Length: 162
Image 1 (cartoon, rainbow, N blue to C red):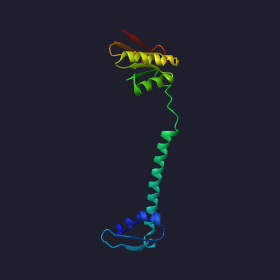
Image 2: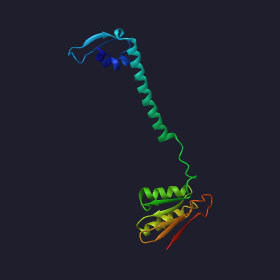
Image 3: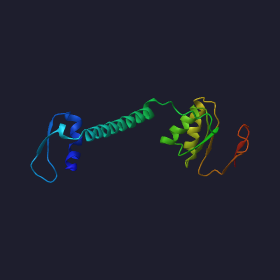
Image 4: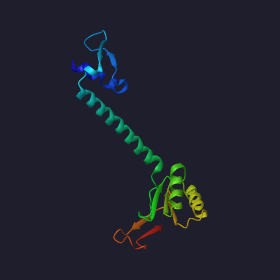
């Protein structure tokens, strides 16, 4: 008879304290019972479980809504001064390069086509963000070096293009 109570569990939420007809798994004809006949502990347990499920769904929805629409943008200022962007001549890579330059990060552009790299470099410099823009093309040999021991020193890294 316990599995009969379980099948009524969801119905209790919507029906309140009214009479409910349900079919037990062992019989094909519906049985009619009064919800007053169900022990109050089962009714309370079903309401508690239902509340917890609804609460969980609402909390997940609100967290997602906050993450997508309400939380402030990430402040990238405390991170490294230089950003390396691959595929920087088209699409998402170019958008990232422009966005990082707009936020004040110096940018190293990496791509295969040197002509497009020069165009993107010129575009960033023309916008007047006040950042350094370097590029590494397919045919250039470039050595980047950084001194990670002294992050407070502005001259801790360098750029050689041979």
